[in-house]
Length: 238
Image 1: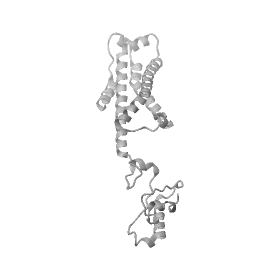
Image 2: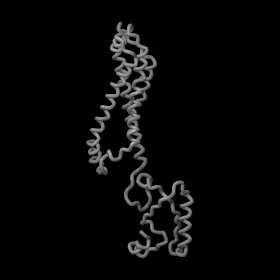
Image 3: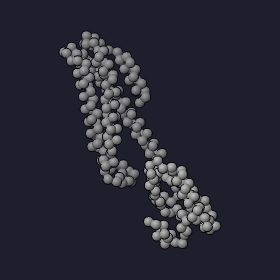
Image 4: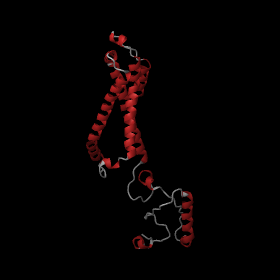
């Protein structure tokens, strides 16, 4: 839309790029010099409309703003709508990560406790011929089933949780939540799952390799050693 075609709606205002109730968008080439472009636009205004400066005694320096920054990081005069707050979003992300990390640590601690309680079972299976690889594979599969079951449950509860959030804050989520999940999000979720499984297996791996069936079957519990120290650190950190 040309500026001249909007002249009627702007009453009798000037057309020398003074009005701030219109919005202009530029598509720049990759690697364009943003500062130089801002300088050129400001100079063009002076060059074309300096004759009207006696009427409009103002100073305007044009600043270009990335389109992706408008919603969360812009608080300019005359915004199209009420924008969000990037700081609040960052706080909520940090809070969500804290909850996630706490849950992961709690799961790892529970996994360690579960293996310690199963020392006798592991000792019997070693006596009957099970190899450390077979035992670790079993423990890994059990851990994977628990983690994947939790993921499926979370996905099943997501629509109900979304409705609850919409009702509480009076917002309407555009479309379904799954429409906004990208391939990067899938890789991130998969990385978290794999990391949890591997970390939760580190201590059980040391137990399986060092456990002596003769000691365990006599009713003696093997000391947790470094694993117990790590567990204590995780509890304190949590």
